[in-house]
Image (tube, rainbow, N blue to C red):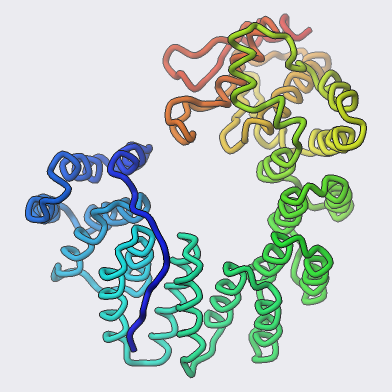
Length: 443
């Protein structure tokens, strides 16, 4: 059985690959190989194979597989070349999941002939229905991750032709249909899964919930949520964040307020992701905290940025009584959560606020809440931490590497409030000051 792949895709430029390769944790050996490959002519296949062969000859199995995983992560144009040579190694054991990942990357790059060849090779290897079905399940996972809708459709159709059924089969079918924007069909598969004796798990329910919500079909979304509860599955933070994100995507801010109140009533905790998905849906806050706005504050020494929770809430309520007042309610709900406490270390030796994972708007709210919280703690406690710091990062994971919008935001707030906190000379992604100086600043 052969596959015909027709999905559209675009190749990743060499410069984009090099930028990604320098991410922390990439591994110096994989970095060196990438650098050597990009130094050589991209059209010189002999040089490419020679460099990879030399690398593999002096690398351990784990180093070779790590390099391949990095190439896959980066969607490197050299992924196929290193995969083919690893595949020929005597120690390598062919795995369906890895082959599917390589095929998806090739599809993403528009290299359909190469993807077809690998897919045909995989199908030829697999005789048992179970193994073939699992290969298509792996393809669905890989295509979904790459956003390849047409390829997903073809893999799904082939999967349905195989006379085999297990939990993975049903889960992958649901995932494919949800990724293709067909939540009603996915709901049917969910019911079929249950009738076949395989109790749907929370991930299957959540995929259907998200698929309905992304299309704005909220009554259907809530119906699946009720079905999930009836099945005995817990409505957890992840599930609630999905619902919040869907409401926010369609500008349903009032529904977000109601949902957050429901979370509090159910005892479902908020998370950093809750902050991000809620605040990224607030147009007034996004206007205040957009990177361009923060940079303009820095350039003009404007004092338009609210520097306290109360000032921000007043600004929101004054600008637009309809939507912005709802944004104010969302902010109040978030500030009342335990997310700040979970990201704030506090002891006599030092205190640290870690902003990793927060988006700009979320970091802004957390910073205002942090200043308010520190004032409260200083008024109640005699002991003051020796050192207080804020970890904001240097922008290694930002859209423009090395330019951190979080760092720009923190720096501007520290400047406007005449804070004693300065950038650490040893760590440019950290602001620091003595606890005594912070207490004098805030109190």
